[in-house]
Image (cartoon, rainbow, N blue to C red; front, side, top):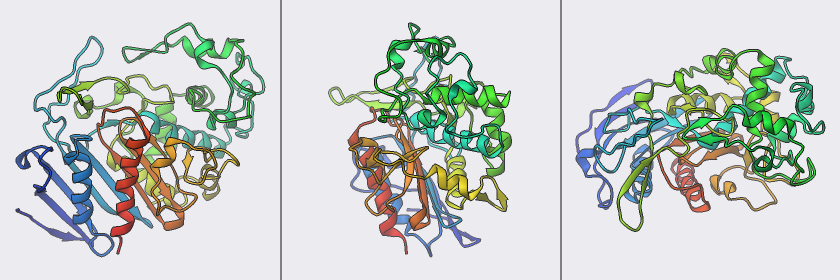
Length: 406
């Protein structure tokens, strides 16, 4: 094993070819380009890297991954490892999407569709609009801002907590997603539909398409695109230059398609699925591990990033506030809950009781654990559906972080 180490600013930079023994189901050692750095005084980065490799790449959960850990106000670990697919040269194309990523390896700036983790960022943008006075209160009726909304009792809070009661499937005759393209009329149908609700607004929380309404609110209220508002007011202050809702702004040569191994045949496929081009607010945001880490670091530090107060501390408190008797914080999922929910499995046992964050079906997840002054994010092009076992994989990796802190 060859290593070239550079000690700089207390961080050890370790670019290396890193073969892991006992992982015969993963790529051959020469195919695994791995680069990582960590602060050896705070975390055993070697052990974390070996563990993540074994349970993700070695177990063929995904051909690669990228992981970042923040402690207090400091990035203490970042790693990207693996190959774009288990099968060299495997491509996916259709009339809409072409896999333009020609790299064989994960790279530091590999770009991922965040799937449902998009909601975590949409909620933050909504709260920033409250700070800016563009939204009076999250308890405002949506109808105050979208006049065609039929139901006057649905508030922004209900959209944030999936408690609108709207039957999204019955509210529209349009196909919302077709070949990765969003039908622009489906949300208008939701607003004007008088279809009966699934349940009384505010009575319960059911995972839904309500974040599509929130993304529309951002554009309507700000008078600009969600990308423009989010960048000018949040992303640029956190050094997030590679995070976009608008597919046309994404460097498509760095986007990783979802990869899935057929359990019966053993063959691999890359596919579109939630690698969407049009953001719905429920999914569709694209980002990199550096941008995810910067956002997590800002939230962990009470809204501060490198001397700039991006959010007020009270706003971060509100985003993390538990909703009584539900399985959520206001803008995310939360470890403390009274209702069974597979997304709870994102949170490791060692996380604080009010840790909050969001997973996505591409194998990504972000967690802010303010009780332990710790935050972490992971991204991979994992192709199975979001299930309890898949979220437990993330929690398994996250749990290892706590055990390796010094």
